[in-house]
Picture (spheres, rainbow, N blue to C red):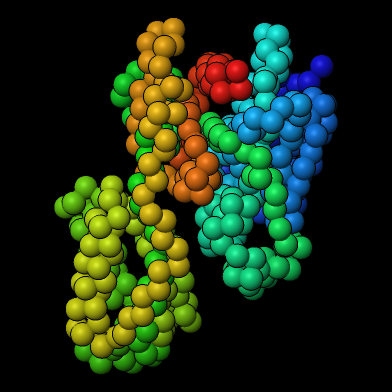
Length: 395
Ligand SMILES: [Zn+2]
């Protein structure tokens, strides 16, 4: 008898958890994340699901059905951001396994194969590129490019995973990802489940500000070329530009050289995460921030180099599929809502696989933080909603 939702959730709770913050450090190909993958394999085996892995570390547990119809895939990811929450990713994997149990308990036998997927490095927290595993599986990035991506210690992706090819998506006709909501839309609507309409365009941009290192005491204020000032004003500019236009702009990562208390820095690198409702809006936002940063370099005697590390265009999920998933439920239709967060579902959708997302209510809307949460009651509603959806799609 496989573990039920709460047992599985309890299995995962201690893995990769920080004793000080209560948050999770489950970076790809580190031991906590590998432990979760081993756990996933055991759970698949306990359910008689056939395990298929690709050369990039992505895994699917298949409920094989003899049929020529394209398969339905559901799942999410097990990695976390640095000091992340428990729900972002694992909720979709555990719910998928529990949904299969629920379908079997209901006596449902799908008419086509049904798989539970785990894609690696969804957060980009180690190698810098979000949705890396699904991009590789879908052919959205080549192994030749991906293999040389490095982590903060200089370890390359090609050093931790063999690389090569993937056929996991070859027979897949539909993908469904269940995910904790990362905002307050469902709270405001007073409903536990929503369906995604679209993902906002978003990107990661590296701002390298260069100045001149010097003594913090003997260098007069007017004689400095301090890149920290340019950086600081750029952060304020980004915040202002995003507020004015209803976009999102965040500098959440910074590195300083030489990073000494008694030295004017020589270099400051800041990473901007920017998101807008439209591709044109995103381009305008980043251009406006860059323009203000460049103006400030004139004042500070510094220089700026801007590098777009990754840009993901807008994703509109299959509207007919979203409507079919959302319609005709006890208590009314599920709302169809947009999200500002990227997901593997966006990569698969862009690769031409009809894709839907289910969101489970998050009472505070907090995400990418130890405070991320969903109630057990809502999680179980999510399992039932996913089972209903998979039944419809595999009928
Ligand atoms: Zn996620």
